[in-house]
Length: 217
Ligand code: C5P
Image 1 (cartoon, rainbow, N blue to C red):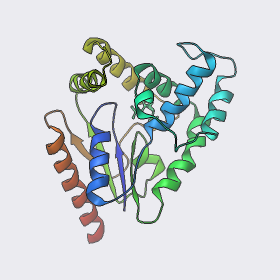
Image 2 (cartoon, helix red, strand yellow; image 1 turned 90 degrees about the vertical axis):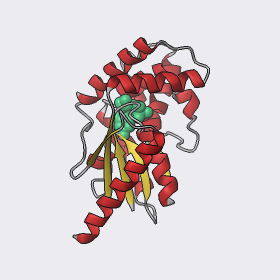
Image 3 (tube, rainbow, N blue to C red; image 1 turned 135 degrees about the horizontal axis):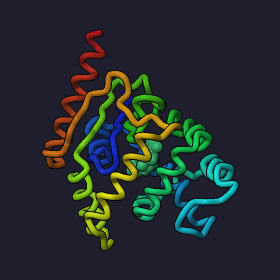
């Protein structure tokens, strides 16, 4: 069974996807880490806070093609500047194309998988048996992300985190190369009012509902 989880930054999709993987005994891939890794490597190559180089697209594609997906560090890649860089490289069609196969290979392994991202249900795995689109208000997402970063010992200001989440939402929604929308047949889950346990319980129920419907025809 393939479970496709999409949704905006800090909507709870990562926690839900991991919980579903554990519940259904499936391997899990956080596809945001792939884009983050390309963004991070570019920031290092260019040694600059912003991404501007005449050969940016070539560099980004090259990095995406040679990405070692076994060596992605979620802590390093979790930084806010890396997230913004990820959103920028995610707009480059050649980067999305270079990262396509590693995702489809993971999804189609024997037994299935859980993947989360922005275009899993729409483009990477339109054939997924269960597709969920996880949302939450921008304020709730900013509060969650702030707590996450603080728990890692990173000093952050919630208003600034909210601004960055809004900027990234805009960039992702208008991404001409992406697909920031629920895939066909996706079930929506708003986690604004739910804690982790309740959100996971709701997600499990939706996956069961989606797969029951699938079996019914
Ligand atoms: O999910 P996460 O916040 O880690 O993703 C970082 C960025 O990578 C997103 O803001 C988005 O621009 C990009 N992304 C994407 N497609 C995916 C996963 C992430 O465009 N499947």
